[in-house]
Image (cartoon, rainbow over all chains, first blue to last red; front, side):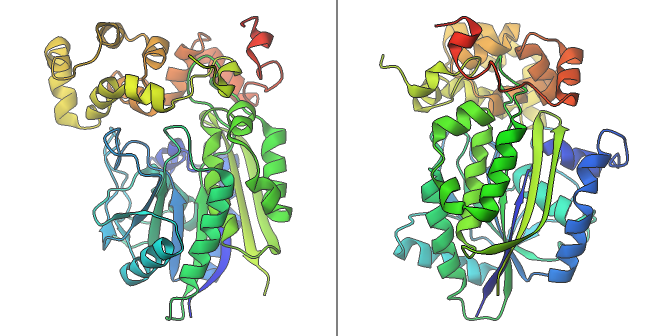
Length: 283
Length: 130
């Protein structure tokens, strides 16, 4: 049977992708951001997952204002990196484990999570930046080391799904994955955050104390984290900090008891606090 | 209109269903600039390009004059308006520098020093607003 072995929480700041694509990760500004992913890349090599279930949000790329699904599962064979206005990122197309994705789609709906099914979808930095930071540089004509099942969550138009809903969706995703009959190792990513506000007069808000508490809760008290209100996210972590509900999907798919094997936190990357955590399911 | 619980957060516009409705054509215009051919057409003749998007007069004016904060007040969302900014060669951080009124350099400096503190920035009353 397939098995979720670990979860990864990770910011997906577009400028991090640009830094990697333009080869400036050794500059003073970026060094401390990437230092914190050194251990993660070694860990990824060791885990060598067959499949990554990647929770992210689209930034009006695959979904503009015409259509705003709360949860959309990528079920197509592959997903091309999108042109977000400055040309597509020079990274490989993302290949799906299509059979597992269809199994998950079916299982989720029967478990009362009425997701949208995407058979054609371009993917933006929300999905490719976490893959890049965790795998390192992968050339465009190469392949990502793992297959990827994308789950896209609306966090652009308020309200995003509640933390509680996300946490429970994580549990349903786990049931779906672990009822898939092939013996596969799966790592689930929850991406976005941490505190940041990109817009209007309060732009630039960073709340490091809050972020660090959130990282603690990810390890020690996921149920507590699932009860954080939208108002608290908006006020304490900035209008775009609400992306962190996506980490709760990842966390819901893990055991209640996990081992934190790595953590990284740095301010700033562009307008954003970069947060990262690796949690292994205890055997 | 009933007050929303997040209306008390200072310097913040929450892009909710009301804003989304109000800003629909404005946002669809902005996102069209994701593609080079559309950027070319817009840059050649802004007025003519905007005719295809039935936005309000105020919204149209705010696009033409690049009033970044007003665009948000009128229903624009940052992930959309940032495409208009990108067309003008303004990245997210420099756009933030403009929206905050701080200017690009002091905004960047603030971010390097750890960003804008949450203290004094939770409630409109702390900004002397109601």
